[in-house]
Image (cartoon, rainbow, N blue to C red; front, side, top):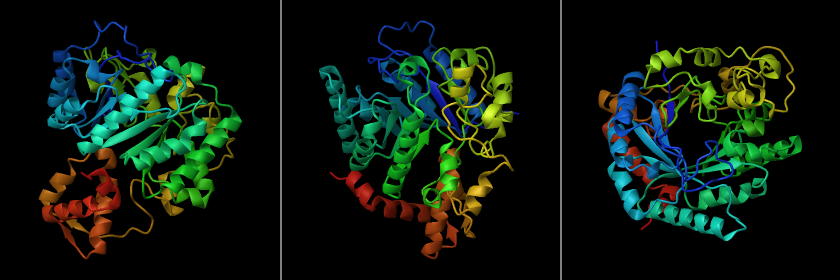
Length: 423
């Protein structure tokens, strides 16, 4: 049986007009694209995705995906069945491009911004292009995400970047903890004291913007340990945590190799999608062992291992063993019973929108259920719960399409959406 992948990150090309220091794919303008999947091969991948993971969210990224001449053909074909987000560096997003992406039913765009204070003229020009792209996205009422890779060179800017994301009404801010792969290897220099500072800063930022801006942390699942040890942090935790590699997340490279996540090197491939089915790949040794998670070192002994399990890509890159401990985590395990998601709920936290106190009995009509199924599976339960909570508050016992329309109108009147949709 094929595991149900919730998110598929598909790198359509390694080519990019930029050479960012933190890039995990070593993308640059001069790379040869001859071995990348052709248009027809991409269409074949889409059909295989439909058959294996019909409910997944599909992230089309690179490199810079907008460099592909067939990008709109691929977007059109993929959006017939999937919720699509484009991962871009933001320098090609003209008004015309954004309108074409809207016509292709693309649901959102992520833009990489690792600094707002560049020292040289070239970097300032690139940032200016990204800021113009954000302005165009706002004008077109197009949801966008800010992606920031945390490294020693920008940890002093995290407050400023969060305020930028909030004031520009980003849909969310993703803070990536650097994985030492690609060019990012040269930036992998956070000390233990740096890490403690970053964790404390991230938690402070999440608390400051709680309820106003969604801030996700990536590739640092051990933040859950800090969360459970401090009731203040528990209040701002929402999500399942844990490294998703090979469990509900995979990556397709430009050549068709299928990796447990985008940060794994090519020698961690479960197989090439041109030669194997997703079912075969998902049942390959590396995917199977990553799902089983018989971890070693501190991660194997840790009481948080079920909730966290460390970053498996970082462990593989540093030790050569994807089941070894994640050396970035400073925590010394105390032993005892393994904690599970139920622990978060029992302590008063939230997992995908569900809390200990939730006892809502709301019925859904078939038409409303059909509509909610269009939302990607990995956030569907959270969205559904929020709708049910709102319905109970206003005295609705049965949710139908009219209810969903009403709630959508109410949401659009919230201050943050008004700021986003202003003329």
